[in-house]
Picture 1 (spheres, one colour):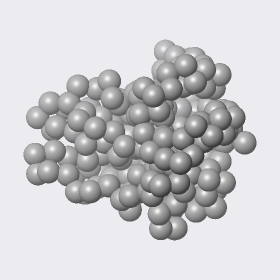
Picture 2 (cartoon, one colour):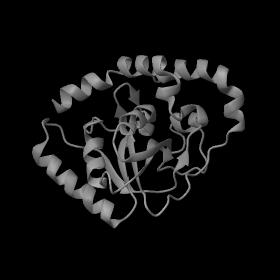
Picture 3 (tube, helix red, strand yellow):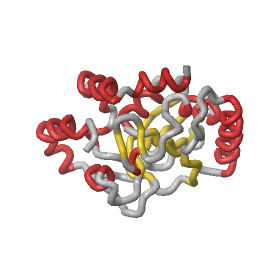
Picture 4 (cartoon, one colour):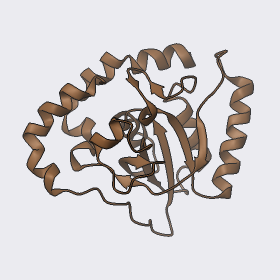
Length: 204
């Protein structure tokens, strides 16, 4: 059980009817003038919050990717029963922010040295991964990873996965923009997990 469980139990009592009526949906295709990026960095509440701050990011959607079950629920994913990772699909304007810049931002919002864990959340759903959507994205990530291996300020190896993007399923409605809807609970969770303290230690 991770630290979010008590928060989600209380939230479910308030939003249970909404959750029951809202089925997860696969994200739709984005317009030609935009592009997509998909990152798994542990808790998707935090990944959303970190990327919403980036100029050129148009939208962020929390969801599940990399698993073997169609339309998984949060309960299934968090139990490790489907093989999915919590992830965020980002729609961005390439004229304002490049994919390479998003990758660089991603590295510094995660701990890439831990497998199947991010901060206080343990298990395969909380693994870090970059899900590439085409050959150009893969080449960008490979170049970024190679440069990071040479310049990283820590000794541990980087274990973040780089894999082709598969079907992305949007998470339940109460997960979307959680940090905006529930700022006190979100800040308590983030601080209790020591996310920012570890990032400061890791990236100096």
